[in-house]
Image 1 (cartoon, rainbow, N blue to C red):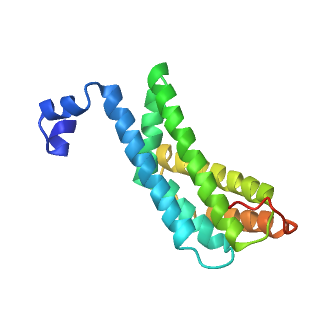
Image 2: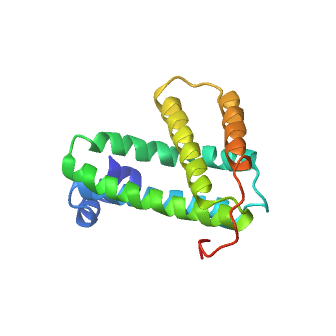
Length: 174
């Protein structure tokens, strides 16, 4: 069925992906690269000056409520029964998370004088909230998340606005 949906012969597919594990790892790599590219486009290249919590929350929700993230979660959950596959997918997830965090920090550090620790903690809070809402959306019944998103925007904005500006120093990311 996969070869048919991809429009290739089964022989060609098994030539490139001899095992189901090889195929799943390639799919996770590809989807993770798409998530990173989308995140970088949203936060490194296309972010207005200053920090606007509602824009940040909306953009991250768009990523985490997408079919790409849904597919990654489903593969990740399914892979948990195969320790070797789970290990490979966990490595990819860790690299993806690191790339997202680095893009996040670079983007926000360039737009504010908020300490890196606060940017990291606010980012961790926001990503955890978005992941939880995405899981609830994927595995629960459909619902309107606008109230939760508004609350998340308020909390995220508060985390950033309550931060004390960092002194100009050499610990800014280059």
